[in-house]
Length: 478
Image (cartoon, rainbow, N blue to C red):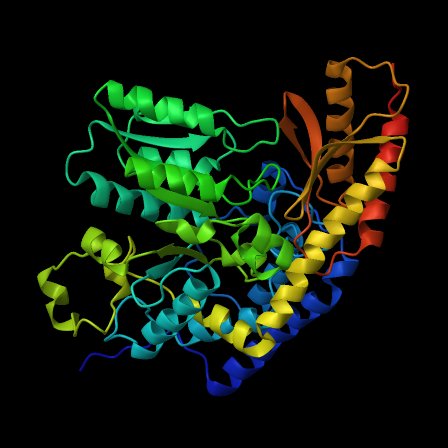
């Protein structure tokens, strides 16, 4: 008789005690994160010194391993949900969704096929319908899928567009996007098998929006060359400035030219829940496909992205494969197997956290949070414009604002002004007090704030700007 002592299990009592310690640590983090320093910096040498070792042959005490992780790993990870995490796109998260992820992981739910978990598939269908309704997509015909993030959603969209518009031969296909489009789109285009000569980067106008006349010219020239314009990518909330492309006008171009219209709304699409955001996003409902990133402005923990499409059959016809080992799980047409709608076969139960948080807080709470974010960014712009030290380089748009230190009367060259603003950012990050980094707009180095955390107060922002001014005064303006 074969004996197995390697069950990788703890006793019921041990599991409870261990679990309580983990939950206590998470609750403590949620309660105290605003009082901690948001930035965690370390060198590779320091990290190697702390962690580098051979895989242990024998195990250690579970509580000791947990304590080591809490003290050495979590303290060396920047707090992306901190009120003073202004850079990149923060991840504000929420406790309900965190616990939902714990449930999904604890029960180890496989969310790929209906047979494995009809409840998980149904929850994804329900939440997908919520999103289709919010963005004005057809709920009966439309569909979608939760992904790991916006990058995977954009890749899924481009592969679908390629299949629907080009079939097997895409050698003459051309795709259009702006110079402000997210880098994940370029990566996705290359992964999908397109060469650089099939990509058209269209310059943006003075407001960083897609230049429509230049787009029309590019499409016309490509048709004259015998090429196939097949996909146009617009952005609903650029990472740099929060700018929304002229979606309605771009939709008209796509319709007249028979081009797939994809909107990358990974950052800004969720703003549709607010009145100002809905106005800015006019035309978003006309997309063939739309990327949304709930782990950004829907306040979900990592990782959950989403792709919506006007016709769910597009996904199924693009991604369905029927190997012998899956023939018993096909089900009937109404029982959706989400592994047939995207790239992943193995999928975690991402829909649960979105479902539980919307059910718990209600859309009204999310609307209020998003509206607050837009308003606090506009208040920050007003504050900066009233200061003799700051220059707004791109106005508050969907909670993103760009600015630079440029005091009235200074005699600095553009090169030295760039260096000064880079210095301010470097000093701020090194202080660990806030994450405030730079970007480049119109060849100028500028500071950028992304204010999508509902726990960020105007006092937090004011303290950060005052600290920036102190750093600037340390560096002579000569």
